Length: 88
Image 1: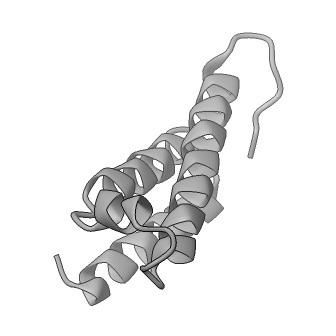
Image 2: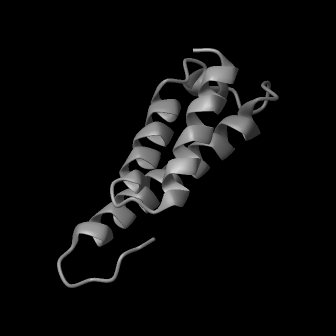
Image 3: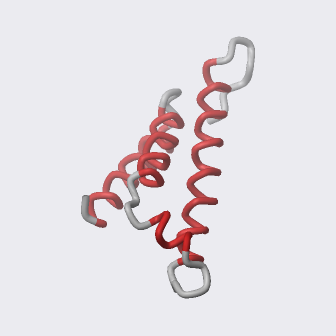
C-alpha cells in the first residue's frame, strides 16, 4: 500500500475515533498494529543501529505503535466493561 493510502486510512480512523463510537478504539489499535506488522523494512532498520539512519525512525514507530495498540485495547475494554465510565 502506498503512503497516501496509509495516511488516508489513518485519517478516516482518526475521524471515527473522534466521533466517540464505542468500537472505534479497537479500530485504531487494529490499524496501528497492522501498520507496525506490515512494515517490511522494520526489522532490517532495527538490526543496523549504527550504519542505518532509519534506526531512530523505526524505533520511534515501534514505541508509538505499541502505545496506540495498548491504549486502544484498554479503551475498548473500558467502553464495554459493565459499570465503568466510558473512555471517550
